[in-house]
Length: 69
Image 1 (spheres, rainbow, N blue to C red):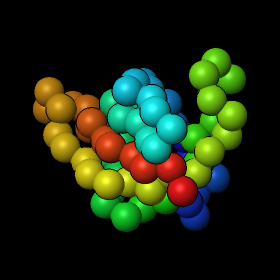
Image 2 (image 1 turned 180 degrees about the horizontal axis):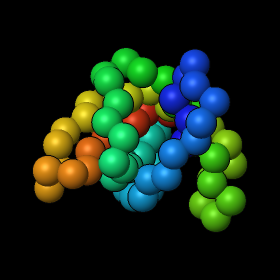
Image 3 (image 1 turned 135 degrees about the vertical axis):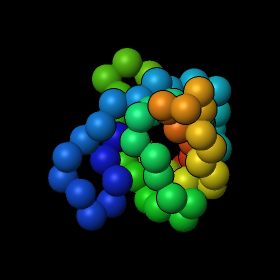
């Protein structure tokens, strides 16, 4: 995943994948409204998504809801 405006990708765990979006868990918090590019060789072709919400998850991680655009 790569936040828009940045060149450095970061890792996350993808889950709850649907046609409209997905959830991720990552150590990189994102802001609501931020756009990211998702690249996965396993489950999805490259997609762009917007952050709908971001919550603290176990004091180290962020759980993030994304909607495909």
